[in-house]
Image (spheres, rainbow, N blue to C red):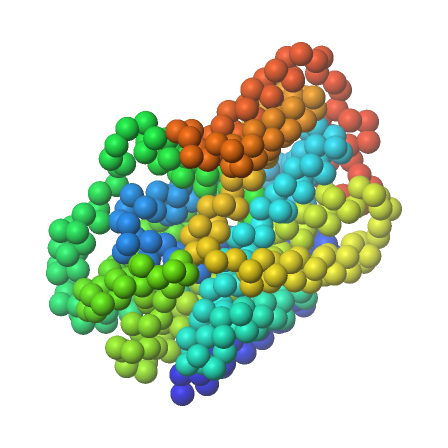
Length: 490
């Protein structure tokens, strides 16, 4: 009955995605839903940007193990990211009528910077997308009672996400996000009520967490601990700003005001609701203290089994159906966007500069081919990783923090920023970060903070040392959707 219910739910999800695909008539429909989403759909897609596998399974388990201090990156950093985007970036992005975030780098700095930043951002999605596929694999493995291995479940999950994303793009994502958000909210509230009652009530669960020190947020220790704490927060709060999935969900709104309001609503909803699976996970430890043995497992991914194991072994059938429906909703809503985002970015800003006269029909076909290719790359990454989803997500955004954030922020808010500064920023940021990861990771300074600092110095020195050039003469590529080049509006 459980498996049949889940299969039925998945069939409905795929059907919604394929129905939404009828709205796709060109590449703008495919990547940003024709920039026509109303507030409720835009807020739902922004919420779904973050509320995925790592929130339900990995962040909740990390809280149960390490407390609030262990999850400073998510939901604290990720929620701040959406607030920063709404307040400082959404209006500028929307006014520029861009198809991808890579288009900004081209219009502001020229093709070399466009290609370099787009490659870096695309590469960062391997960890993010792989985290979602790993979660799907875990869910399918648990549902099958072990008949499917984790890796077999990952393969099945990848095929499922491809099934509707490849045809409908952002329109399919928007409609399935709306449906899945409703399932997530209703389903997890119901599970929280049931599991909390099984643990003896909310008061007992919160009291147990308080007694165990799980609400201690600020780091204890000296400079090393504080720098690590700040670095973890900044990795998501700032490093995830120059990301295509956030960009495409913000700019898919029907107007500028909707883009800002939808992003703020999505940020608030995510921050508040992210604590629901944490409450459920700690309730699981109160119900069965033996689950703490998972914290010592050799494979770090094992702690992510806390919620699935509790639901399957301790709750009635209706709760199992509701939980796995909500879990799969969270994963699918994030996974589909995580595959589409790098696809659009790589196709538009890495491939298209070398084939500038590609027709829109050819561009759509290329998008779908790249989508399959990237999904296969993420699948291989997921099959070979032993990190938790929380760790995958944090590692993914270190790349964009050191390579893409400074050129983006400087390009919007500093008139003197130029291509020389952007190139110096990217090179110094990436090289210093890579060297620190290889040789200095045990030092007091976190590698991503060193990379960010060097990126800022590179932008400052490179821009001041050279005369700011005029906007690139051919900044507007034939067939692209932005206005001709020049600095963006403030």
